[in-house]
Amino acid sequence: MPLDRIALISDVHGNLTALEAVLADIAARGIRHIVNLGDTAGKGPRGSAAVARVQEACAVNVRGNWDDFLDTIPDEGPAEMVWWRDELAAAQRLWLRTLPLCHDLALSGRRIRLFHASAESPHVRVHFHHTAEQFDGMFRATEMTGPGAAPDVVGYGDIHDAYIESADGRTLFNVGSVGNPLDEPTPSYVILEGELDGERGAPFGVQFVRVPYDVEAEIAVARERAMPTADVWEIELRTAVYRGRQTA
Image 1 (cartoon, rainbow, N blue to C red):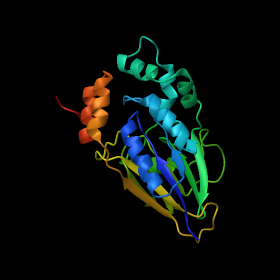
Image 2: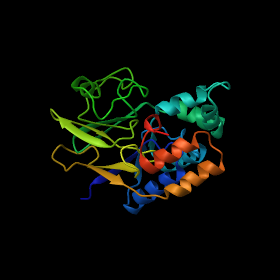
Image 3: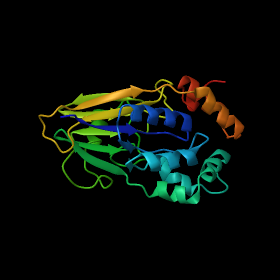
Image 4: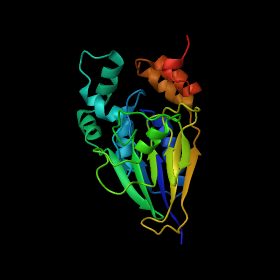
């Protein structure tokens, strides 16, 4: 009996070219169920189109930190933030801001919890280099996750840095970023494989996938649209060096 497969994407950040490449790869593998872990807009030039695409393609969308605050940017805010806010339709901003913060599922007898950044909040970040206490915190029941049994597996986005770590029978992984990867320039997503609501004895897998795309075409869109901070965006897309660490 074939195993069920679920694709997990995150942090598209308005990079429609990368999103379409990843969605095409997912479709080519015959995967129909997609979960988006948030931050679909902001930073890149086509947040509105990206939001429309995930609304169409993803069975589940989870709220990220950008999704949570883009609708709250004041008119007197930084020019780039106002630009990204206004690039979205008002209905899209409302949709993003009201998305669920967490999604749970069961696969091959494992309780799996998915959220954007941490069990505490989409605004609380847990990096690849983290403490044992932070690791434990990702598996706790909180006001954000709600009550219930602790998960065996937790997946998240936010840090744009794909990795997987297991300790004491628990597995934590980051899916990386589709539109703004900061570990290496190639977009990343994850495939979960197992039996939905199946028993513990069934096979279970976490697979990381990297999908090349036309970086220069996406950079050209940012230039054509005169997007603020397009210069640092270009460097991030080409080099995976975060804007705060770029040198002149």
